Image (tube, rainbow, N blue to C red; front, side, top):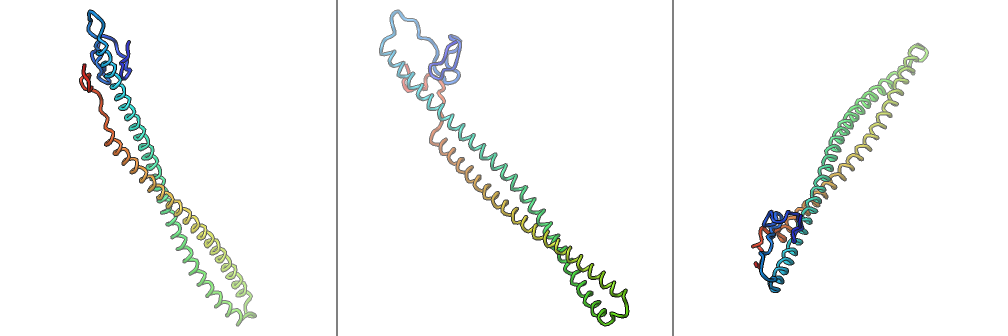
Length: 220
């Protein structure tokens, strides 16, 4: 096995005329009666050095393009993950908003019930004050009504506490949603910037693969 003097690709001597990768002429020098002239050798070495330099530049360009493409793929993956988290947070916020609205409805119902019970309590209390000695049973009803009012007040306090807790949770979810939206926006800007850099780089550094020995500036 031998190696191409330009791109170092392995090949079997006398089986191919040109390198399948860079196109370098791999045919051996024709047999001569004497040595190859020095000027011919120098020109061949100059041509080989130029081809190696061009091949190294093209290979470096290819590596840089692959790096930019890898960065772009990473940014796109991060953006997709952030977008997914953003959607999850939006769904969670919708659930929290539904629960918040349900809590508001329950608070309103208990407030209405409390107002009704307070009015009933005042009416019964006035009646009790007018006829305290007439009925112990009436006093017992009054006591039970007070216990019912206290129970409703306790329930109302619990609902208010739950309502305040859900308000805090809603604020946390809204903050997380805002941060996720900001992160998504930053990823979009980074991706757009990388795409611009990649397009600019490709437009200013076009890759030109050497097709054959005759594409070099100095042909022997």
